[in-house]
Image (cartoon, rainbow, N blue to C red; front, side, top):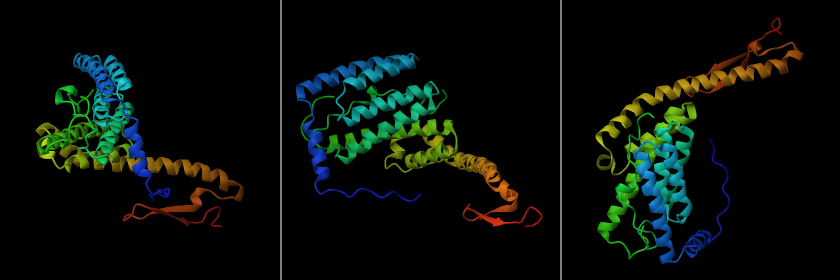
Length: 276
């Protein structure tokens, strides 16, 4: 699909947006209080998740989101990824995709702004995230500049949350089915398999799931594509027959020829209505 034309960039626009982002930050004391409030809701939500009360956990995660400053991208990603995990447990696939995507968007934004900048708070620990069977059925105020060890830990934390969000989105997409979703799941699993820290971040079970799905999903995606294509042609045929009928023709007068190399179709006139 051809990319849409992009709006021309205005010189200095990115800098202005970044500056505005910084200016909208809360004072350190107020930010710390808001983060503490958010973490309290998150801790309660994690406990609810562990008790299998996924609906209530989602509500608590939403409360944690509501009081969290909207520029704390890492914390937002953790919460959204946790919400996606709840929706997976509830088999609410579309909601799981939406929240996992929001988590990934926050991480992309964080890395785009430079993950080692002073204004980014220290990421929460792994205990702040819900674990669960993510593929089964069913801050502190800004501190000093990060050293090399802290920077490596931060990048590892970001990669770890990205891996979880990708696993959750891939699972939800594969459950939703349909050509588009299955292709999206394939892309997510491929992205997981190429993460720089794939071997160290992913458990043996998760890596087995990734490799298994990368083998199984292409056939499912192809079958879904053929099914949806056939349904589309059936609808077009009904529409075409209605248009051609006044001329004594029908879609049977034309033959669709598939190019096996490209998968594209061409239409040839095959005669009809007595060969006319």
